[in-house]
Image 1 (cartoon, rainbow, N blue to C red):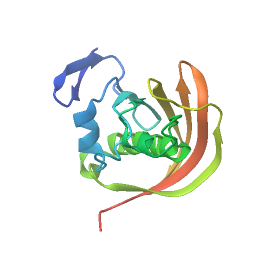
Image 2 (image 1 turned 30 degrees about the vertical axis):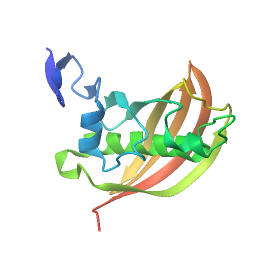
Image 3 (image 1 turned 45 degrees about the horizontal axis):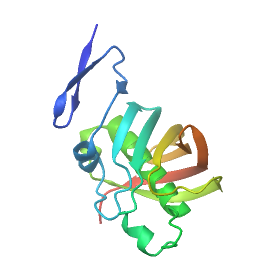
Image 4 (image 1 turned 180 degrees about the vertical axis):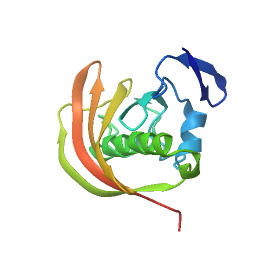
Length: 167
């Protein structure tokens, strides 16, 4: 039996899996997390499996503001911003898992472990961020993430975060 899932401004999408949300556009992302330009580092969520995983997408452009200072003659996306894009993807997963009452709450980093940067991310790349929930206890969640470009791993990390109200 097909189930319609709201897709924030787009037509409802039909899926056979009630845990799977196939696409969240930029408007939907901004309903979930409070980040805005210039620090919103994901363009869409390609897929969410409620309570399990999410795939975020960042279209890397030479117009991204960090390239003005991060090697202007040889632009490379800073590794810490790749980690931040992982965290933003995870935050959307958390909100979609916990429900509308968690929209706009802050997800604070607690730890970042085993971060590895394998290949530079440059303008023109499309970064896919695969985030998997390892566990959660209360408002503390732990994730494993791998970022790829054209199917090749460019960065990976494990991290934990806590969901809090804005203060």
